[in-house]
Length: 84
Image 1: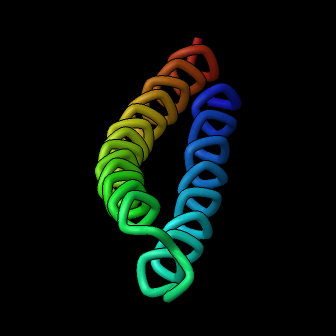
Image 2: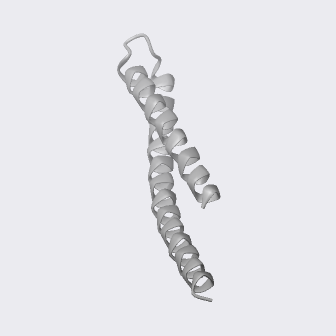
């Protein structure tokens, strides 16, 4: 379960990093000193970051389900061992 906890934490950290970058890209899109190419690239980058965040959230949901299943299996094993 520690592996699942670590994987979840890693993905949450990456989401936080991507959300911060989305804010910076948003400012770049509206920055009057940005060239049209820079604005376009900021929009593309923001779209990709948003898609990545969506994938990471789906991975976290699956990892949380896996972690719950691992815990149930561990609890069942401990109960079997304790009753012997």
